[in-house]
Image 1 (cartoon, rainbow, N blue to C red):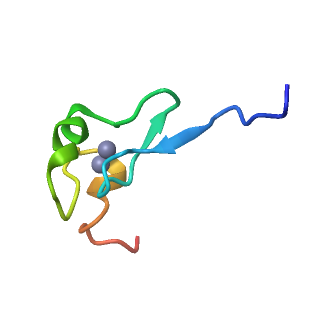
Image 2: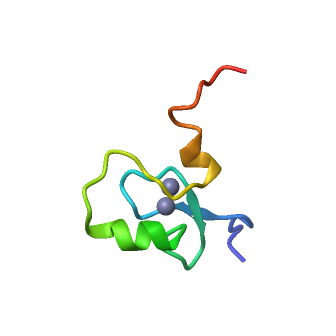
Image 3: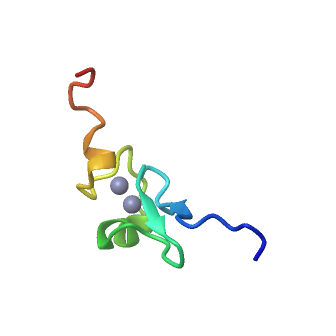
Length: 59
Ligand SMILES: [Zn+2]
Ligand SMILES: [Zn+2]
């Protein structure tokens, strides 16, 4: 009991991905897992965190 945060999440291991993954996982999706060796400018994992990019923001 060292006061560890409850909802600890880590960023997806895919360099271009903005998603967070649960503790113990490395990639947010199979897409990122498969793309780990691929150079990509943007992530296409279809998660909201990544979809938001490119879409008209502002709201
Ligand atoms: Zn992503
Ligand atoms: Zn990802």
